[in-house]
Amino acid sequence: MVIKQKFSIDFQYEIIFTRNIFSPENDTLIRLLQKTPGIPTTKVIVVVDQGLVGVDRGISTTIESYFSNYSQVQMLDLPLVVTGGEESKNDTRELVKVLELIDRAKVDRHAYVIAVGGGSVLDMVGFAAAIAHRGIKHIRIPTTTLSQNDSGVGVKNGINYFGKKNFLGTFAPPYAVVNDFLFLESLDIRDWRAGTAEAVKVALIKDKEFFNWICNHAEQLSQRDLSCMEKLVIRCAELHSEHIGGSNDPFEMGSSRPLDFGHWAAHKLEQLSGFELRHGEAVAIGIALDVCYAVQAGYLKQELADQIIDALQKLGFRLVHPTVFGQDGVSINPELLKGLEEFREHLGGQLTIPMIKEIGSKFDVHEMNPAWIEAAAQSLLQKKEAHAD
Ligand SMILES: NC(=O)c1ccc[n+]([C@@H]2O[C@H](COP(=O)([O-])OP(=O)(O)OC[C@H]3O[C@@H](n4cnc5c(N)ncnc54)[C@H](O)[C@@H]3O)[C@@H](O)[C@H]2O)c1
Ligand SMILES: [Zn+2]
Image (tube, rainbow, N blue to C red; front, side, top):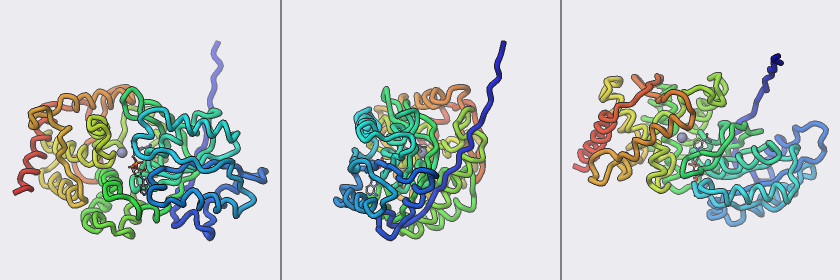
């Protein structure tokens, strides 16, 4: 006896771009929150990244007074400030604080959890929202380049566990994403730059024209030209969301993770550096390694690899980091190679690593030759030495 069951759920959400989201004149959020028919007062809680408080002590008060202007939206508690950065994902402490707030404020499934912060805080709060009451609607307000152009616009959330990146997490599309460009102004230079690595990544696998644009604007981007960064964020967010919506595999059921070009090494490098490396910085190194690997394997022409590495360096990334190498400082770190198996394990199935033969499209490989990875790392080292001359 078999009863067949089948249904599908149609997810849709807007990724909105604005400036100064909590100014009294900006009603973007209110318009979003009023969309629930039959519910006169929409209830929300807000979680704020500590990094934002560090650059604007008054942010919680600004948020409170923003909502107090609108009777149709009720903030159920004061904004909860949580630790920013990877630390917020490295254990369950911050997650529990958010869950406690959800419980204390009696947030139900008609209410919203609004997260304001970098990719780490958004991942952690998104996870809390996804598991409390089996899923509360969440709105993301990403405040870093990386979260505005990549992590915040997607459907994944999670925290690190057992020392492994994103070991606990769910696929839970947000109710909406609102990118406020003005938040980017207060980022420190490393976080400003970090998102550009994801832009290079997605351009390399999907959009040659965008890659050329990045090359032509690399210096402006590294010198904090906000209007240039806005263009980069928008195109990158578009490419990421087109992929998620159009790939037929938004919840990554298969073995392929096209958007994770350069990431098998990146995730491991973050961990090996004790998270001293930012995700974007590790992605830049991971891309450089895979691009050099593609040359070793005969997939990619040396001149294209040089162009990519040159772009990453102009954007301000250092592509040689001690965690890539073993104790002698020259040979490949055997721990790094474990990143391949961890990458496979995360999705299951066959090892599938995105690679490029040309700029703008990717293909998959199912094994990586350690000797070529070693040679790729050596060629990065040589480039660094040549650069130093
Ligand atoms: N869910 C996904 O699909 C996905 C995709 C890519 C990356 N990620 C994750 O995103 C995380 C990285 O996110 P990130 O690069 O945004 O960095 P981050 O969230 O770690 O933030 C970096 C630092 O910037 C601070 N900060 C945030 N906004 C600020 C602002 N406007 N002004 C000043 N300081 C500010 C934070 O407090 C933190 O100290 C990683 O954990 C990565 O794994 C998730
Ligand atoms: Zn990434």
